[in-house]
Length: 239
Image 1 (cartoon, rainbow, N blue to C red):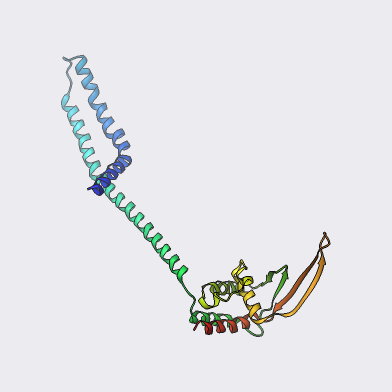
Image 2 (cartoon, one colour):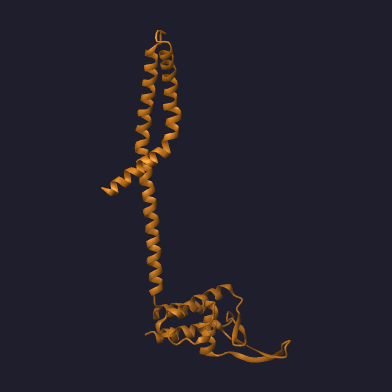
C-alpha cells in the first residue's frame, strides 16, 4: 500500500503542477466572474431581476470544459509519470551495466591469445621500411621516450596496459617499468629491459651548484619487430 500511496501522491502533485494554473485562470476564475456579479447584485438588490438561466448555462459550459480538461490531463499525467519512471529505469540499467563492465574490466586477465593477437598488430610496424627507431634519455633514473608515430604510440599504450593485466608477466615487472606513468612508456621500458638498446652513450653536464649530471641516451632499433617478438614470448609465459 505504501507504494500505491507514494504513486498517488506523485500523481496528484504532478497533475497539480502541470494543470492547476491553467484551470484556475481559464476555468475557475472565469466561472467566478460569471457567477459572482449576479450573486452580489442579488444580495444588494433582492428584487432586481437577474437572468439566472444565462448564468446557469455559462456555469454549465465551464463545468463541461473542466470535465474535458480533466479527461485529457488525467491520462496525460499518468503517461508522463510512466515515461519518467521508464527514463529512471533506463538510467539505472545503464548505471548497472557500466558498473558490471567496470567490474569485468577490473577482473579481466590478459590471455595467451590476446598477446598473440597484439603481436599481429605490431607486424605492420616491423622491419624495413616501417621499422621505427625510438630514442630515449635517462636522467637520474627517469626515462624520457621520444616516439613520434601516434598510431604506434597508441598500440604501445594498449600493450603497456596489458602488462598490468597479464598475471604471470605482471608478477615479474620491475620497479622501473611499474614507475612509468604512461602506458606506452611502460611498454617501451619493458622492451628496453627485455631486449636492450643500441648506441648507448652518455653526456655529463655541470649544474649551477657545481653538481655533475649525467644523461644517458640510446634507442630501440626496431620497436615493431621487437614488440612482435616480446608479445610472442609473453604469450608463451602465459601458457
